[in-house]
Image 1 (cartoon, rainbow, N blue to C red):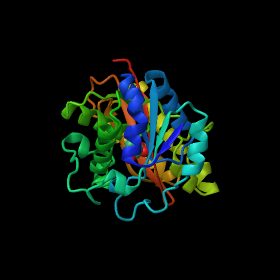
Image 2: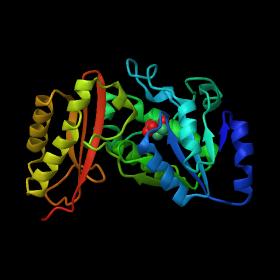
Image 3: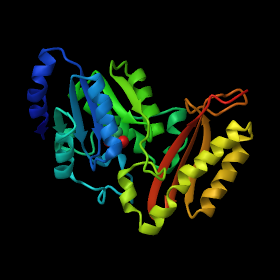
Length: 285
Ligand code: PAF
Protein backbone atom coordinates (compact mmCIF):
# COMPACT_ATOMS: atom_id res chain seq x y z
CA UNK A 1 0.00 0.00 0.00
CA UNK A 2 1.24 3.46 -0.88
CA UNK A 3 0.92 6.21 1.73
CA UNK A 4 0.70 9.51 -0.15
CA UNK A 5 0.53 12.91 1.49
CA UNK A 6 0.50 15.36 -1.41
CA UNK A 7 -1.54 15.86 -4.56
CA UNK A 8 1.49 15.47 -6.84
CA UNK A 9 2.41 12.19 -5.12
CA UNK A 10 -1.20 11.08 -5.56
CA UNK A 11 -1.13 11.69 -9.32
CA UNK A 12 2.25 9.95 -9.70
CA UNK A 13 1.03 6.94 -7.69
CA UNK A 14 -2.27 6.60 -9.60
CA UNK A 15 -0.60 6.98 -13.01
CA UNK A 16 -0.12 3.22 -13.73
CA UNK A 17 -3.79 2.46 -13.01
CA UNK A 18 -4.90 5.43 -15.06
CA UNK A 19 -2.65 4.38 -17.95
CA UNK A 20 -4.12 0.85 -17.80
CA UNK A 21 -7.63 2.39 -17.71
CA UNK A 22 -8.37 0.45 -14.54
CA UNK A 23 -11.28 1.48 -12.33
CA UNK A 24 -10.35 3.48 -9.24
CA UNK A 25 -12.67 3.06 -6.23
CA UNK A 26 -12.50 5.82 -3.63
CA UNK A 27 -13.50 5.50 0.02
CA UNK A 28 -13.50 9.00 1.58
CA UNK A 29 -13.06 8.88 5.38
CA UNK A 30 -12.00 11.05 8.27
CA UNK A 31 -9.82 8.23 9.60
CA UNK A 32 -9.95 6.56 13.02
CA UNK A 33 -10.97 3.50 11.08
CA UNK A 34 -13.09 0.72 12.60
CA UNK A 35 -14.76 -2.45 11.35
CA UNK A 36 -17.57 -0.38 9.78
CA UNK A 37 -15.03 1.33 7.53
CA UNK A 38 -13.51 -2.02 6.60
CA UNK A 39 -16.86 -3.03 5.04
CA UNK A 40 -16.57 0.05 2.83
CA UNK A 41 -13.07 -1.05 1.77
CA UNK A 42 -14.34 -4.55 0.96
CA UNK A 43 -17.08 -3.11 -1.24
CA UNK A 44 -14.52 -0.88 -2.96
CA UNK A 45 -12.24 -3.87 -3.53
CA UNK A 46 -15.12 -5.71 -5.23
CA UNK A 47 -15.90 -2.87 -7.65
CA UNK A 48 -12.51 -1.32 -8.41
CA UNK A 49 -9.04 -2.48 -9.49
CA UNK A 50 -7.40 0.25 -7.44
CA UNK A 51 -8.77 1.18 -4.01
CA UNK A 52 -7.93 4.63 -2.69
CA UNK A 53 -8.84 5.51 0.90
CA UNK A 54 -8.66 9.16 1.85
CA UNK A 55 -8.14 10.16 5.47
CA UNK A 56 -8.85 13.83 6.03
CA UNK A 57 -10.57 15.52 8.97
CA UNK A 58 -12.25 18.23 6.96
CA UNK A 59 -12.46 21.49 8.94
CA UNK A 60 -15.03 22.89 6.50
CA UNK A 61 -17.75 20.51 7.68
CA UNK A 62 -17.41 21.25 11.40
CA UNK A 63 -19.31 24.11 13.00
CA UNK A 64 -18.14 26.31 15.87
CA UNK A 65 -18.23 24.32 19.12
CA UNK A 66 -18.25 20.96 17.31
CA UNK A 67 -15.57 18.30 17.76
CA UNK A 68 -13.06 19.25 15.02
CA UNK A 69 -10.17 19.64 17.49
CA UNK A 70 -10.91 16.53 19.49
CA UNK A 71 -11.83 14.32 16.49
CA UNK A 72 -9.52 11.28 16.87
CA UNK A 73 -6.55 11.39 14.48
CA UNK A 74 -4.95 7.93 14.36
CA UNK A 75 -3.14 7.76 11.03
CA UNK A 76 -0.45 5.30 12.19
CA UNK A 77 -3.09 2.79 13.39
CA UNK A 78 -5.25 3.44 10.29
CA UNK A 79 -2.25 2.66 8.10
CA UNK A 80 -1.60 -0.67 9.87
CA UNK A 81 -5.26 -1.63 9.49
CA UNK A 82 -5.39 -0.69 5.82
CA UNK A 83 -2.19 -2.62 5.02
CA UNK A 84 -4.21 -5.77 5.78
CA UNK A 85 -7.25 -4.94 3.66
CA UNK A 86 -5.98 -4.86 0.09
CA UNK A 87 -6.15 -1.07 -0.17
CA UNK A 88 -3.73 0.24 -2.78
CA UNK A 89 -3.39 3.90 -1.84
CA UNK A 90 -3.88 5.74 1.44
CA UNK A 91 -4.22 9.45 0.67
CA UNK A 92 -3.77 11.58 3.80
CA UNK A 93 -3.43 15.21 2.71
CA UNK A 94 -2.98 18.30 4.87
CA UNK A 95 -5.48 21.18 4.87
CA UNK A 96 -3.02 23.07 2.67
CA UNK A 97 -2.91 20.24 0.12
CA UNK A 98 -6.66 19.94 -0.09
CA UNK A 99 -7.36 23.66 -0.09
CA UNK A 100 -4.30 24.93 -2.03
CA UNK A 101 -5.76 28.39 -2.60
CA UNK A 102 -5.98 28.94 1.17
CA UNK A 103 -8.45 28.05 3.87
CA UNK A 104 -11.38 28.60 3.84
CA UNK A 105 -11.55 28.12 0.08
CA UNK A 106 -12.84 30.95 -2.12
CA UNK A 107 -14.99 28.49 -4.06
CA UNK A 108 -17.24 25.98 -2.37
CA UNK A 109 -20.26 23.79 -3.08
CA UNK A 110 -23.55 25.08 -1.76
CA UNK A 111 -26.31 22.55 -1.17
CA UNK A 112 -29.89 23.80 -1.61
CA UNK A 113 -33.36 22.35 -1.80
CA UNK A 114 -35.29 20.05 0.53
CA UNK A 115 -32.31 17.84 1.42
CA UNK A 116 -30.48 20.89 2.75
CA UNK A 117 -33.37 21.92 4.98
CA UNK A 118 -34.30 18.78 6.91
CA UNK A 119 -32.94 16.39 9.55
CA UNK A 120 -29.33 17.30 10.47
CA UNK A 121 -29.17 20.41 8.27
CA UNK A 122 -30.82 22.97 10.63
CA UNK A 123 -28.73 21.69 13.55
CA UNK A 124 -25.42 21.79 11.65
CA UNK A 125 -25.49 24.91 9.45
CA UNK A 126 -22.90 24.69 6.68
CA UNK A 127 -22.10 21.05 7.42
CA UNK A 128 -23.37 19.60 4.16
CA UNK A 129 -21.79 22.41 2.14
CA UNK A 130 -18.48 21.43 3.75
CA UNK A 131 -19.03 17.74 3.02
CA UNK A 132 -20.08 18.35 -0.59
CA UNK A 133 -17.11 20.66 -1.15
CA UNK A 134 -14.50 18.23 0.12
CA UNK A 135 -16.08 15.25 -1.65
CA UNK A 136 -16.14 17.22 -4.89
CA UNK A 137 -12.44 18.09 -4.45
CA UNK A 138 -11.61 14.43 -3.71
CA UNK A 139 -13.55 13.33 -6.81
CA UNK A 140 -11.54 15.80 -8.92
CA UNK A 141 -8.19 14.71 -7.45
CA UNK A 142 -8.72 10.95 -7.38
CA UNK A 143 -11.01 10.68 -10.47
CA UNK A 144 -12.72 7.54 -9.17
CA UNK A 145 -15.11 5.44 -11.25
CA UNK A 146 -16.85 4.50 -8.00
CA UNK A 147 -17.06 6.12 -4.57
CA UNK A 148 -18.21 4.22 -1.50
CA UNK A 149 -20.01 5.74 1.51
CA UNK A 150 -21.72 4.35 4.60
CA UNK A 151 -25.51 4.39 4.85
CA UNK A 152 -25.20 5.42 8.50
CA UNK A 153 -24.84 8.97 7.17
CA UNK A 154 -28.06 8.58 5.21
CA UNK A 155 -28.65 12.27 4.52
CA UNK A 156 -24.99 12.78 3.53
CA UNK A 157 -25.26 9.91 1.05
CA UNK A 158 -28.46 11.38 -0.45
CA UNK A 159 -26.79 14.80 -0.78
CA UNK A 160 -23.72 13.30 -2.47
CA UNK A 161 -25.94 11.41 -4.92
CA UNK A 162 -27.77 14.67 -5.61
CA UNK A 163 -24.48 16.53 -6.16
CA UNK A 164 -23.25 13.86 -8.59
CA UNK A 165 -26.50 14.15 -10.56
CA UNK A 166 -26.52 17.97 -10.49
CA UNK A 167 -22.87 18.26 -11.57
CA UNK A 168 -23.13 15.62 -14.32
CA UNK A 169 -20.38 13.63 -12.60
CA UNK A 170 -19.69 10.13 -13.89
CA UNK A 171 -18.77 8.82 -10.42
CA UNK A 172 -20.94 5.88 -9.40
CA UNK A 173 -21.93 6.31 -5.76
CA UNK A 174 -22.35 3.10 -3.76
CA UNK A 175 -23.90 2.98 -0.28
CA UNK A 176 -22.96 0.28 2.22
CA UNK A 177 -25.29 -0.83 5.07
CA UNK A 178 -24.36 0.19 8.60
CA UNK A 179 -22.24 -2.22 10.61
CA UNK A 180 -23.38 -2.59 14.21
CA UNK A 181 -21.90 -3.68 17.52
CA UNK A 182 -23.38 -6.93 18.95
CA UNK A 183 -25.85 -4.85 21.03
CA UNK A 184 -27.04 -2.96 17.93
CA UNK A 185 -25.17 0.34 18.34
CA UNK A 186 -24.10 1.65 14.92
CA UNK A 187 -20.30 1.69 14.62
CA UNK A 188 -18.93 5.23 14.71
CA UNK A 189 -15.67 6.91 15.62
CA UNK A 190 -17.68 9.10 18.00
CA UNK A 191 -18.76 6.08 20.12
CA UNK A 192 -15.42 6.34 21.92
CA UNK A 193 -16.50 9.69 23.41
CA UNK A 194 -19.18 7.84 25.44
CA UNK A 195 -18.65 7.12 29.14
CA UNK A 196 -19.21 3.52 30.29
CA UNK A 197 -22.70 4.43 31.51
CA UNK A 198 -23.57 6.23 28.24
CA UNK A 199 -22.24 3.31 26.23
CA UNK A 200 -24.64 1.01 28.10
CA UNK A 201 -27.57 3.26 27.19
CA UNK A 202 -26.52 3.95 23.59
CA UNK A 203 -28.30 0.92 22.00
CA UNK A 204 -31.61 2.48 23.09
CA UNK A 205 -31.25 4.68 20.00
CA UNK A 206 -31.57 1.79 17.52
CA UNK A 207 -34.10 0.10 19.81
CA UNK A 208 -36.30 3.20 19.51
CA UNK A 209 -35.93 3.24 15.73
CA UNK A 210 -36.84 -0.46 15.71
CA UNK A 211 -39.93 0.30 17.81
CA UNK A 212 -41.02 3.01 15.35
CA UNK A 213 -40.41 0.55 12.50
CA UNK A 214 -42.61 -2.05 14.18
CA UNK A 215 -45.38 0.54 14.48
CA UNK A 216 -45.11 1.31 10.75
CA UNK A 217 -45.14 -2.40 9.94
CA UNK A 218 -48.24 -2.75 12.12
CA UNK A 219 -49.99 -0.16 9.97
CA UNK A 220 -49.61 3.13 11.84
CA UNK A 221 -49.55 6.10 9.49
CA UNK A 222 -49.88 9.02 11.95
CA UNK A 223 -46.26 9.86 11.23
CA UNK A 224 -45.92 13.05 13.29
CA UNK A 225 -47.55 11.51 16.39
CA UNK A 226 -45.50 8.34 16.03
CA UNK A 227 -42.25 10.34 15.66
CA UNK A 228 -43.17 12.37 18.75
CA UNK A 229 -43.86 9.20 20.77
CA UNK A 230 -40.52 7.75 19.70
CA UNK A 231 -38.81 11.02 20.72
CA UNK A 232 -40.42 10.78 24.15
CA UNK A 233 -39.04 7.24 24.46
CA UNK A 234 -35.57 8.50 23.55
CA UNK A 235 -35.80 11.25 26.12
CA UNK A 236 -36.94 8.69 28.70
CA UNK A 237 -33.84 6.65 27.89
CA UNK A 238 -31.62 9.62 28.78
CA UNK A 239 -31.07 11.09 25.29
CA UNK A 240 -31.58 14.70 24.22
CA UNK A 241 -33.05 14.20 20.74
CA UNK A 242 -32.47 16.83 18.04
CA UNK A 243 -34.94 15.07 15.78
CA UNK A 244 -36.57 11.75 15.12
CA UNK A 245 -38.23 11.74 11.75
CA UNK A 246 -40.05 9.29 9.53
CA UNK A 247 -39.44 9.76 5.82
CA UNK A 248 -39.85 7.97 2.52
CA UNK A 249 -36.59 6.31 1.41
CA UNK A 250 -35.76 9.28 -0.83
CA UNK A 251 -36.20 11.50 2.27
CA UNK A 252 -39.41 13.05 0.95
CA UNK A 253 -42.21 13.44 3.51
CA UNK A 254 -44.12 10.14 3.71
CA UNK A 255 -47.71 9.76 2.58
CA UNK A 256 -50.26 7.09 3.37
CA UNK A 257 -49.21 5.48 0.08
CA UNK A 258 -45.52 5.22 1.07
CA UNK A 259 -44.32 1.62 1.31
CA UNK A 260 -40.57 2.12 1.82
CA UNK A 261 -39.63 4.18 4.86
CA UNK A 262 -36.55 5.31 6.68
CA UNK A 263 -36.65 6.36 10.33
CA UNK A 264 -33.81 8.72 11.23
CA UNK A 265 -32.66 10.28 14.47
CA UNK A 266 -29.94 12.47 15.92
CA UNK A 267 -29.64 12.72 19.67
CA UNK A 268 -27.15 13.73 22.31
CA UNK A 269 -26.13 11.24 24.92
CA UNK A 270 -24.23 13.38 27.38
CA UNK A 271 -21.95 15.49 25.20
CA UNK A 272 -21.86 13.01 22.32
CA UNK A 273 -24.08 13.45 19.30
CA UNK A 274 -25.17 10.12 17.83
CA UNK A 275 -27.05 9.58 14.58
CA UNK A 276 -28.65 6.45 13.24
CA UNK A 277 -31.31 5.36 10.79
CA UNK A 278 -33.33 2.29 9.96
CA UNK A 279 -34.94 1.37 6.64
CA UNK A 280 -38.38 -0.18 6.86
CA UNK A 281 -40.42 -1.83 4.17
CA UNK A 282 -41.97 -2.63 1.90
CA UNK A 283 -44.85 -2.39 4.37
CA UNK A 284 -48.24 -3.87 3.55
CA UNK A 285 -50.78 -1.41 2.08
O1 PAF B 1 -18.54 10.62 6.35
C1 PAF B 1 -17.41 11.12 6.51
O2 PAF B 1 -16.52 10.53 7.13
C2 PAF B 1 -17.14 12.50 5.95
O3 PAF B 1 -18.27 13.31 6.02
C3 PAF B 1 -16.56 12.47 4.52
C4 PAF B 1 -17.55 11.86 3.54
C5 PAF B 1 -15.28 11.66 4.51
C6 PAF B 1 -16.24 13.89 4.05
O4 PAF B 1 -15.31 14.50 4.88
